[in-house]
Image (cartoon, rainbow, N blue to C red):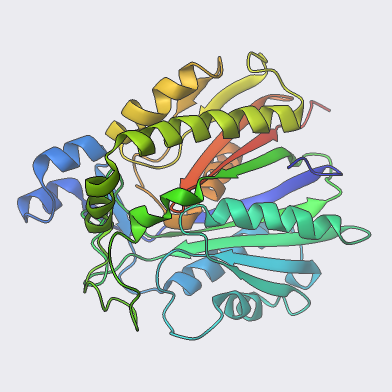
Length: 345
């Protein structure tokens, strides 16, 4: 997807709780195996003990609005993405967030696309902005809290450990001077891989009827017993290649464009990135792959928006420079965003 008019990323926020769960403690308390902790490469994970995921999203949304100077009443659409339980059974966290921040003129929309939800919400926000006339704002939030006993942040998945966090990104169209420009956001999918998170389980009547703890390792093992690992590894390589090439094409860029300064990796475990992602990217683009997630772990739906925040917070791009941000989620779906720093005034 290439925006029909320039879309500016006006402000962002990454809200992290103050508490941390260290890998050292997790190993000592036998909550994760030593070799698994080593392969993950996360020294610690942020943990929200006393704040819900939607409340974290409200904090992030306030921060993004405050830093932009934009009033909540000016937001026309609010999209909230999440992966894990939001605190109530039949309820819209997107409407709660809009109400809490005073975005009473916004249309709240909830997005559930597992770990690719933040990228999907950004893409839908751009599409919604294109349908309106005049200056307009869209606010994208994500929030996930991976609490025991229903979720084991160290052991519920292969190749990823899960940190609690919320993000917010304020988009506007048309973009203003000084905005980080969203040049393209490309998404591809391989729906035949959905069974990796279903396994051979029957359809349940209520949450966690098949397993008291969310255990993606278990469903993936069931899938791999029937299909082996080769088809998934090939699909992952092919889709990474496809989504990067598609994003570059949408943005009108060559793979060796010297202004591309980096390719930001999803916040997965170190070994997963080194084995599956980095070798594929080296054959695709000249820019270096970078990992900014070692201190947070995987943030559920928030990896790509958190990357946008780090780009702005660290001034990681010089005037006119370009960055690629990658994301992936169960289903499976892959996304690649192309952002460009504003030119020097």
